[in-house]
Length: 147
Image (cartoon, rainbow, N blue to C red; front, side, top):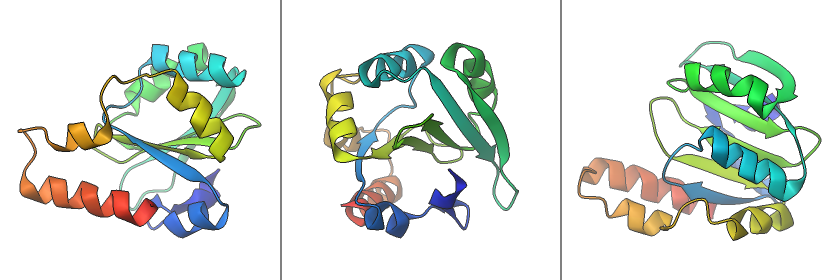
C-alpha cells in the first residue's frame, strides 16, 4: 500500500503506470460511505496508514470497516491512505483537507461511481464560493495531473 506514497503525497506516476483511474470527491467518505463502497465491491476489510508531514506512516492492519472507522476518524486530520483488502481500490485524503481521491482499476471505480455517494460533481464542488483562488488552482492542478 505504501508504494503509492512519495514525499508525503501520493505518487501520481505510480498510479498512472499501474493504469489506475481516479475519482476526485469533495468530502472524505463517512463510515456509511465506506460501507456502501464495500458492499458494491464485495470487500469487507480495509487497511490504512496515516501520517503527518515528514513523519513515517503508522500502519493499521486489515480489519473490518466497523472496527477501523473510529481510528480513521481519529486520524482524519492527517494524510490517510486506505486500501480495500485484496483489491486494487484506494482512497487518499491529504492532511487537513476534506476532498479525497479514489483510485484503482477502471472497472472498480466505475462500480463505485454507480452508487452516487455524492449528488454533485467535483467540478460543482470547485465552484464553492468559500474557496480561494489559490485553493481552486491547487485542485485544478491536482485534477489535471491525475488525468
